[in-house]
Length: 387
Image 1 (tube, rainbow, N blue to C red):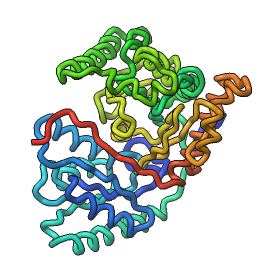
Image 2: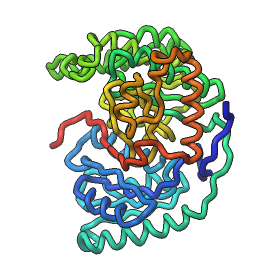
Image 3: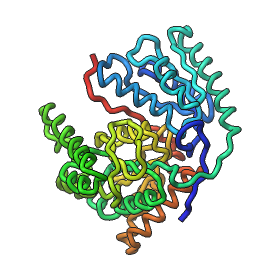
Image 4: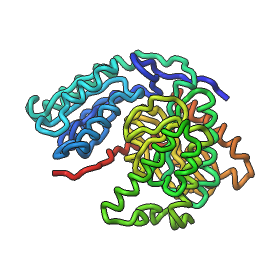
């Protein structure tokens, strides 16, 4: 197994596995200008933010935190933050939050610059300068202990908990053994299996944190007056053979392997300990991935049984199919076939080792299917009303 990867050194924190210049709209009203800037500059990417206005309290603060966290992600070389000028999350706030990371960062508002065309021209100027600077930075060798892996399962089926998720868990255990960090998330998909994670907690406090975030998620749904079974398992999950939320949860937790749970962090928060970390996120794939990237993950491992093309604006997403049939049907979107555990009798640990080797190659620059296909989905979890 490889014990290192080739990444980009950062002034602070973990190295990057990509060297993007991020065009970051602070509000939905500036998103199209930001997209035009990114489209005009090879090497720039845009997080197409759909919120940032008319948000209040903790909901507003969470959006600001996640946007700043995304700008601070190790895979981002530099940031151009673009606001409208009258929003709840101003571009100046993102500038101040990202600057301590040591990255080059610029910020401006469309209203101050004088409209769309002038703003696009200014954004392109800033982005081209950053891309030119980023292009001169070489990759360097880093130990696997400098890798933070986000785990996700989406479009799951009845085989997710048998093939792809256990293989992902085997890869997670190998990374943790090497000193790296693995994020397990999807709180809604821990319901019914949370006691098993709590038993693996580092201490009683962390065990209670595991149980607390699950109780809180359940209470949110109750307070809303809805039945969580209307959204989890999803209709596609049920067509794929999953019958209950507990069954889905028992398969979901396999992604975290068998390591000790070191801590529980809030949505979008950066882990303070290495090893296996639980992040409190919704089960919705794109919102969950965004939260883990805001927390600093450089690579995403994504298992799927029904199939999913989802990617990210700042991080490579490695797709793992639960069956060989899916891998062959959606070969354009898949990176690894964990279905060989069924079709060829390949041991789970062997597929897990293959997955980690693939993750290391991707961290060193190999493109994923989602990157080749141009997938850059982005969404931020909401916890309050728009006013």
